[in-house]
Image (tube, rainbow, N blue to C red; front, side, top):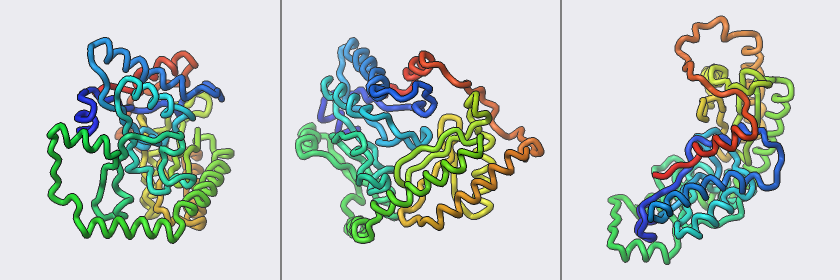
Length: 319
């Protein structure tokens, strides 16, 4: 973000917050991505009306903490066009999504058929070793340097870290982990959707490759988020020595982002456990527990088309 501010001479940064695409009842529409992108257009006009321009728009290529959300087709392409037309840069956060995890591509932003100006990466690049990096173009890097915006990192360019990153990239290529993520990820989603067909507590199964979310609901008609249910299942997984945590605005989405070496046998284990935990919930296990410690936050019921479009104003904000 410092680079974007220095390169553009602007200070306003636009980012997504929450993310509610998963609750859309709009049905299949070819221009759904463009519809959501209109909110960014309104924010850009507001910035312009105040005599400023955007420094950058930053967004995960797939929304992770917001609930494992796959962005609608053409969303980022439309947003990037608007931001660049206003003089801003586009930043892709690939910390949780990059390095072949989505299977079909090495970078998740490729799903949207776009090329960012700046890419941030971390976590998997070191495979447990603390390592991150920022990737940009020579032109933007020179603009950052020309502004006199000194950047210094005591451990930057550490040769041990560089060797580790190089080894990780070699393993991904040599062991074909990207192709593996696609194959096993497709199998995982297929098996989860089989469970969904007989377990009404699963409102949605979504994802790409080994980036998968299981959206739990209390009732399949109202779509009320099942936060208690998700918390219960997460805890039950821990008891079976499996780490599956929750995400989303209401913490009702189980996130599955396993290691890239995850196997079909691992999928079978996870799905068998999940099916059993859902059966426990259907038998009313929560009614037998003291649930006073659960968050009683009021959450919305299913939304109409108009309500959803109005709610997009909360999906983006200026920093």
